[in-house]
Length: 391
View 1 (cartoon, rainbow, N blue to C red):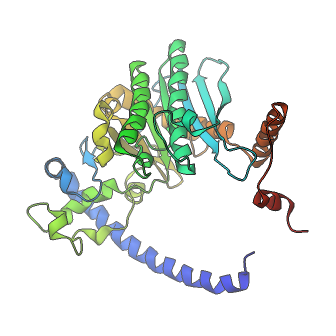
View 2: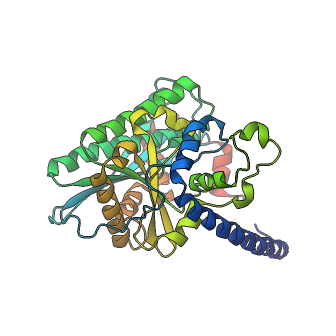
View 3: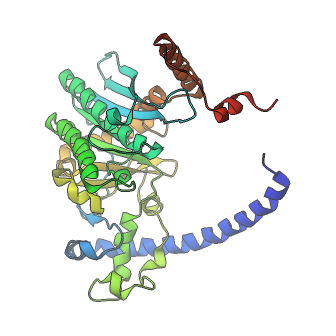
């Protein structure tokens, strides 16, 4: 139970700190905007510096794929008949106080075809795993919430690839949208061996390649992104040294940190009008080295109401102007239909979400099945007390 009397004074201190930080952040932003203007006239040189020194930067730096001045308006009236496929997932994670330890992943699946009056696909698909070996057959892994999230990532992209086959059969232009990043950051943050990381990543990339073979452009949609790859690019303008050597020359204090902390979206909300997109950049995150032909690129779109969305795409999409225009057009249309957020992702989420009542019913179904098989059904004392309270 919260003590609001004690909390009140602490909130007052926080609001004062937030006010001071807002002032400092505005100062950093104004400096970053000036550096952006300077970078427009120096983008080729910046690109060369990044390419020549990739292993020397302690943080990911956006590498220009297009001219830094290449801000594009939405392509209007591009197509009248097209399909959009999306997936999203949720999970019931391991609970060792429950009647049985098992894992459930629920995937929301959407296939909308516009301009044809065809019935949409709008459904969910549950996947249940009763033990660790069924979960990751190729590794002995302690299953945690984060590991379940990795498995969910794989199931989402697998189901997306299957939906893309159905979209391809319709014969209309189509795009595939994942909710979130295409960069598998989560596999590097766990205590997984490099071999297991590579096997997980290969499964993920295999599904991306399946989508590529269908000639359907893929993108990841990230709302309110906290990435600062582009800000890190602007920091190169502040480096006082002729040669990049961050580790040795800036071991105590980085000489380019005058605009840190700052997010990419804070810059692009000032530079992009509604529905405009930024230039395309290449991610230089270390894990991207393993992506082969699927190296991840990204750009930003002004989604309206001060919302800047980060759109991540494989390089084979970035290299195809028709794919880029199709994604730009369709994402804007989806945002407009969803009144601020892509409608297909909203509905995929709604199909995927597992409510607390669903969770209770899931364990109730599981207990009945176990009883029918003459299996012992019991909760831990902790779980019993949480449900019944203290009498």
